[in-house]
Image (cartoon, rainbow over all chains, first blue to last red; front, side, top):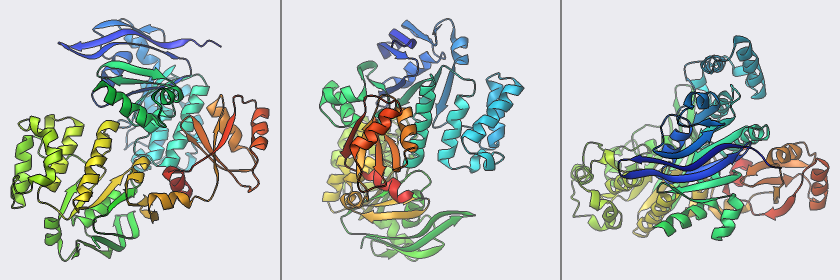
Length: 244
Length: 300
């Protein structure tokens, strides 16, 4: 079974003066894959992601996201991706329903579609009793789950998640991963940037960036075998140490 | 006791931040408060560092009462809050000098305590604190919390947002400080860091779930855990959730952790059930529980 690639990067590079923040990275991500994009603080993850989501022009190299070119078709890219970060989630002083309506509008959905999505989402998440409450009053775990659902409202081909479960309690975190598995099973590609190594363990494949380059890329299982360790945390420590 | 809390409660308006919390930390102990955001960890730190007065209960730090003797506590403890709270516009060296001065000491006087941490940031001593990387900010904050040679050190989520390499170095530093006789209370949302503490309190929604050594907490886990893997994680979880003998199922990286209601669990039974559900590449093996398993069982 050969699945189509939804992200293809070839020698993608971003330089700031002499400094190559991202140095000729190449990789592919398949449809429905959960892809972990890891690296230490300052390794170049954020710069790379900005190029992929069409808000920063590469210095050289090629990349397509959802079939669109990162140099010339950035508006099409933005329509076909979702984004969720631990920091920017939803509007605290809007209710659950208002947030869904607002973001549906931003994504350009029709009124009928927004209504349909709003009802579907509220019932799937079991939020019936609190759908008129302000988002600010919800526990962090609920906010994260709602925020993820909102990032899927316009049925994007790819969702970019930035450290999605940092600080969340272990049970909610797992409910969150179940939601991610479900979305991936339905064909949505999940691109997770994180430096929480336990989030890396859940990905189908992970790449590890060190100083602007991808130094390792494989399934967590194979990486652990390759480095002869038990956890992604130890893979990361070994890799970072070898580079030094 | 270096730190002692009895029946501490604190509410913010309607929200009960911590409820009836009691625990003791012995001199020289490295004690961890382990729990997610919103569990009440920071409230406990603020009460113990005399920045917040509890609604109920009493607490002492280094033998001083947190309400009556707050001034004595402030001289006896070091506190590194969760948010970077140094002066961004002062240089590394200026920050350190500032903290030494307000505690009536000098960098030279207690240099031996911070030396192995400070040498790592000394090359940048003329740089403004706001311009440091995350790992370096954390090291500077630790130096500032230590410069008056405190008896007790409070560290509120020192490793949050820090990459694995810096996290590892940070814990190595804590172990060395502990050897110098400093009592340390540290909080973290990372369950894997729990194993590095002498004893831990698991905390959620303002209540303590358990207090013990990490080993003892894990050994109390009541069930046998099985690592289950298959070709489709989402379908695997769904199948297990509808299995009538299920006790719990939680995703754990490339596997799920499964526990069964029965004592007479047979791997072969579950395997054939999963095969009938259309799953392939099924693997099932007994595994060791960890702190997260224990936390989830207690939090149920």
